[in-house]
Length: 282
Length: 258
Image (cartoon, rainbow over all chains, first blue to last red; front, top):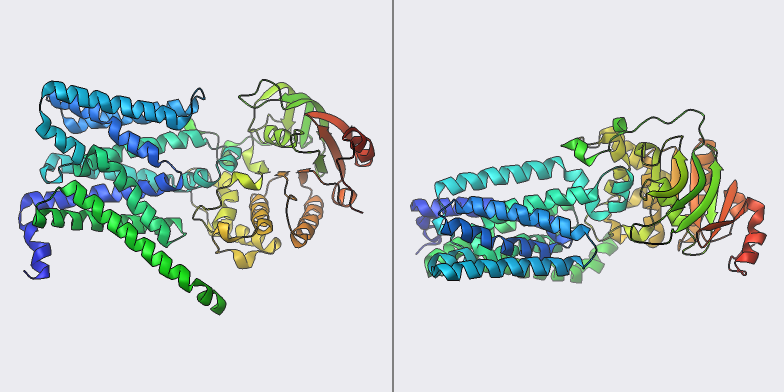
């Protein structure tokens, strides 16, 4: 088969076009937020957010409510809960998150096992991007728009509170409240990501493209652009691999992200080796 | 929604009272949120506008606590504290606070120039990006501290002294009336030390008030107009000539390099 066919032929199907658009939207939003997740060391929170959404999904599924709405509600509740927990000092923040995250996930598994319907359950855990409906796609687009607009409007404040929260506070900003905003945006992004790669692998979309980008540049806007590029390409390539080899789409997307990360690592290693020479020229 | 994050932005801050001292503390006590004991007790001092005051004492003496209270970062436990006649935190654009170097995440992907322009943020407020004029002020501050050539470097690539200069440049770019500098002289090179000395006298000439936490007595007489000696959160001496008395209390822990 010629390479162009390999890329284009699958998209004659409507479900593949919808899945590709969903992958692009989800990859873009997760990668953008992921840059903050990586720089602010919030990786564990990102993973927890994705997992705690499970009971929301299951409850919505069992009651035949809208599952995306269930995920959205659970995600927002978790984001606020984590922000609240992290302000109290009785136990360490990561411990509190670990408790909330495993507890909620276990609740989701329990509910699902009681319903004895594990087919759809695996879609929740590992994603089912091929199953994205047009309605869901519209919702993902709306969520992506909200995330991009808020990140754009609050860029300078989010940037400042990320690297110098004390100065931010001294000039009258409230770093804790900006953190709430970031957690809420993460909850919105996670809802789409769960459909694409599932509860278990969602944090990969938040972390891996941003981590890869962070190896290649030390400018924040460039890092965001690179992370988005990597995530979008990985979503599309992963989807094609999944189609042609008939393997799980979520896992294929995540592994493509990991491949991009390894490539970035190699690029950096080569660059480091040549660095002393180039510095002598300047 | 913006009010929820308040107060931030030049127009948000109250204007200072005319004729009020830059800082006035009366029997001030301040404590960190989790602590039982106040980190600072019974401090009374008036700092007139245009004064360069040194806060001198060993680590843990309460120097940083006093600066944080003045910057509105700590609640006041007892007594009174006014900044330009107003409660702390009311006019953030007029008060530049320079934290210890360790408070900044130096690995963050941001250039020196962009770090310095964050000093302009209290004048901008929500949704406004730095204007050409703001960038010009940031560049002028970099120039003044002699690190204009490092403007496009990532902040982590600088040496300790250069990082301190970058933070000072940000404080300058803010064009504040009161500068609160926490240990700007700590672990810096001789060249940076000389730049800071010049800066302190320039600021005095411009009528600015500067309060500097330090644990050195080097050049105390040359660089400052007044000194407050602290130990264990209490004042143990006041005035430039008081350091021998303070030193006796500290059992010779303060060092004077002639």
